[in-house]
Amino acid sequence: MSVNDDNSTAVDLALFGALGDLALRKLYVALYHLDREALMAPETRILGLARQEYDKDAFRARVRDALETRVRPDERTEESMNRFLARLDYIEIEFASPESYNQIAQWHGNSPRPLTIYLSVPARLYGEICANLSKSGCLDDESRVVVEKPIGYSLQTSEEINDAIGAVFDESRIYRIDHYLGKETVQNLLALRFANPLFGSQWNQSHISHVEITVAETVGIEGRWGYFDQAGQLRDMVQNHLMQLLCMIAMDPPSNLDADSIRDEKVKVLKALRPFEGERLSTDVVRGQYIAGTIAGKSVPGYLEEEGANVDSRTETFVAFKTEIQNWRWAGVPFYLRTGKRMPEKLSQIVIHFRPQSHYIFDNDQRSMAANKLIIRLQPDEGIALQVLTKDSGLDKGMRLRTGPLHLDFHQAFPSARIPDAYERLLLEVMKGQQYLFVRRDEIEYSWRWIDRMIEGWEARDILPKRYPAGSWGPVSSIAMITQDGRSWYEDY
Ligand SMILES: NC(=O)C1=CN([C@@H]2O[C@H](COP(=O)(O)OP(=O)(O)OC[C@H]3O[C@@H](n4cnc5c(N)ncnc54)[C@H](OP(=O)(O)O)[C@@H]3O)[C@@H](O)[C@H]2O)C=CC1
Ligand SMILES: O=C1O[C@H](COP(=O)(O)O)[C@@H](O)[C@H](O)[C@H]1O
Image (cartoon, rainbow, N blue to C red; front, side, top):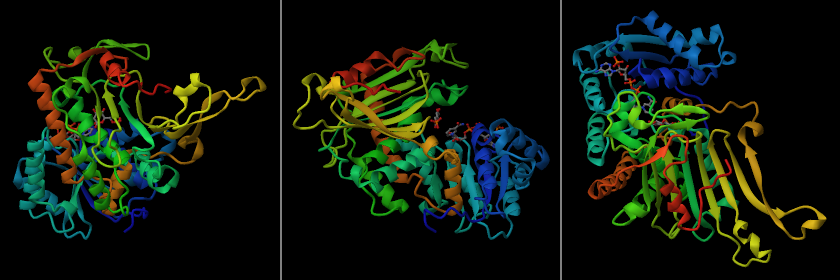
């Protein structure tokens, strides 16, 4: 099956953690949309697995509630809701009890549909669940497993979890989710870079001076203190999502769209990332933690005042850093990345700064603006803008320059097309048996290796997060980090 083929094969989807936050907020909504758009095979069945006492009807009612809250009224009808809900079954099960797994084997029976396990549970349970599935005889060579991020909190723990999954499932059957790879605009990076010769020929250190990646969130930790305080923004967002964005921007062209061709190129980027050592841990990295502030006119508490908070926490909610990719394509090109919670707006954006003209003939006072920028808006207001220089119009303007965007706004360009949620694309690819949007084991491990060194450096040097008010763009030192290079974060939001 090719990546262009949108037909999924029928599967028996067994969803562990069926009453959890992710399932109720994201997964049923995504599955519903696939069904509504006839992208889910009619024979596909979905089994919810959790330990709460529900029967099938109560479970369907719970999922209906979740859909009614999250699917727009004009995107649901009684018929489309009922058709989707009729696919659902529920089994009450304690994941640690091997004896209860025969219920899953019975549900799957002799079905020709591949049993597709979705582990929407904390990663520490992955190994035990896989082992219990294997012992219960549910699995065969066609079975697949989908696992959520984060896989571990260090290289060592991720290796342990990957070993446990790998003891049961072959790598070709493991779908590691990084939901940023399912975002339509992130996939568009492949099209932008590899379908447009204009950019393909300029995508290197001869033409690009530096690259910025910003992933800003307005939310805080949303009641997830227990998880987040162990992780911090570096493990929660950088190790996975920002590293994947960096790879998509920096990788060499894959020879085709096969999963392994793409993943091989991403791994080369991760291996070439300059490690943080010595003074660079202080000069090129900024950790931050939000204090109380205001976002969109509303007061919000500081991190240490969140529900369940430990007032001594040193966990970072913001990270900015400057890195380099040590290879022929990118030698000498700084990559500036930043991500944080409680920022003034939700914004994921990549800015490619091209080098200025080598010989400049216009007014000298305009020289600093004389370079092109490519702005890739991942969310919200998805689109691509190329900042170009033109002559300012008017008889009195002489040869004065001005910058203006050549702008492709995806919502305006494709008004009838709904931008699907990342989980829709990812679940569809699982059903198609396509792995190119999922993360291979070595990608995760090279990323952890790099992140672990940063964390070890922070600990060895006792580098604490700097405070920043909620509603700001992070600690002032994250601005200084880039301005000391004579540059600034792109601010035309
Ligand atoms: N929530 C999110 O936005 C995101 C989550 N993820 C990842 O997705 C996964 C799921 O996260 P999330 O939905 O937030 O987690 P939750 O804790 O909300 O959900 C976990 C579910 O698993 C059930 N469960 C846990 N342990 C057992 C057990 N031993 N036996 C039976 N049922 C059990 C829980 O039941 P009970 O309610 O009874 O405890 C609950 O239904 C995690 O790996 C997380 O890191 C990734 C990105 C974003
Ligand atoms: O994985 C995670 O991602 C969300 C941000 O995702 P987005 O699609 O809304 O950009 C983040 O809030 C969460 O902490 C993290 O676990």
